[in-house]
Image (tube, rainbow, N blue to C red):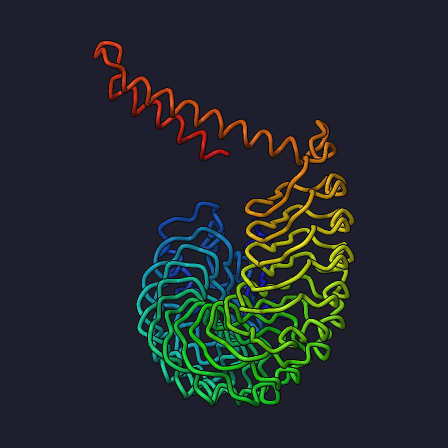
Length: 497
């Protein structure tokens, strides 16, 4: 338990709080002592007894209390992360004027953030994420001139992002995702010239992204997923934000093209732009993004009638670390380039459904031996399914539904012993089902047949109930109580399939 209480890891940004504990010398600690006891008195539930050691002393020394560290006899580090504390955060914490780090993440604290935390004038790192805090961010927080890290994700905070946070010019990390703030992104945040990580996904933010944000040239993480943001990206974004490692703008209402200058953000690993209204040809040179691991562009309008509208696939072959590629429903047209087979053998997830491809699925798809998921539904492919699919021995999910594939199912699909889901519906396939797909020792087949048998049993039971309710003789009809009971039983079965 002591290890859990004292351990201190920042989840969102992978930033580790490094605290040095020095020797203790006696001093006037009465103020800190009383503030800590007041904090304990406000806790309504301490299921792990993490605070049981607090107050078991006749002096004002508290160096042995769980979660408390000292520096030069003054309380500097206070961490109670990852417990199940309930209750409000007491205002008395504002009396800890020497406090440098306060970490109360992963608890069940409710109520508001105390405004008088602003009196902790030496506070550098404040972690309050994954609690049940309500109200707004106190404007007084802007008085904490030494604050470098503010982590308040996953609470119930409202009232928008206060513009006065732009006064925190020492800030390096601001993470406030999954709070129902509402409002727009303040222009004043552009003053945070030292900011490296900015995360406000899922905050009900609307309006445009202020141009001043793009001047924060030290940004490595820029995450605004799942808001209602509008407007377009500046053409020079890649030159303005050259250090980006993660760019996440998924699930907004952004428009325009993806600027080719993003090729200059050469450190990008995670590039997530799906579910917007981006359009125009993709002209980013992905070959310059050698560390790219995750590329999600689905549900945009990148396709065109130009023959080279998928030329960007060629530039992805240098991304040797690419694990995920999602270009679902992007209006791409024409034949899928054979360069698709030159993608990384580390690629495990490939989604290309919902486009307007023509011609055959290239046989070189079999080169992607790392694939576990292949989604090609509703893409207008024609011709035969390539037998090279049988080389994808790690494949677990394969969806080919709603195309125009014809001819027989390749026997080589029977080699895919890891396959759990195979959907070939709504095509023009013919002939017989390869016998090796139906072998009794096939794990995938056993899973599929078990699933089908359970569905069949539930359907049969439902039909029987319908028949029992329809007989002419009232005494022989199933009464309503039994009908409800049987239907509930069927529903339970379906929920466990």
